[in-house]
Image 1 (cartoon, rainbow, N blue to C red):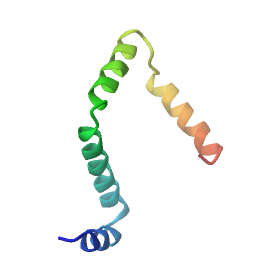
Image 2 (spheres, helix red, strand yellow; image 1 turned 60 degrees about the horizontal axis):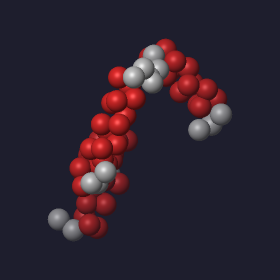
Image 3 (cartoon, rainbow, N blue to C red; image 1 turned 60 degrees about the vertical axis):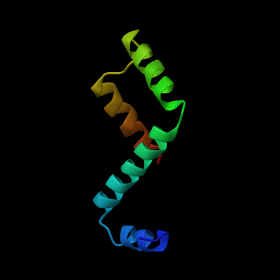
Length: 70
C-alpha cells in the first residue's frame, strides 16, 4: 500500500480510529528511538522516588489546561 493510499484511508477513519493509528505510529517512533528505553527507565526511577501526581491532581491539571485552551 502506498503512502497516498494510507493517508487516504486514515482521512476516512473516525476520530477514534485516527487516535489509535496515531498512538501506534508514536509507538513505532519510540521503539526506534535509541534513547527511549533510558528515558522510560529514568521516568520510572523518578516515580519510584516519589515524583508523581495523584489521579485527582492529574484531572485538576487537565481541567486547568482545558480552561486555558491548551
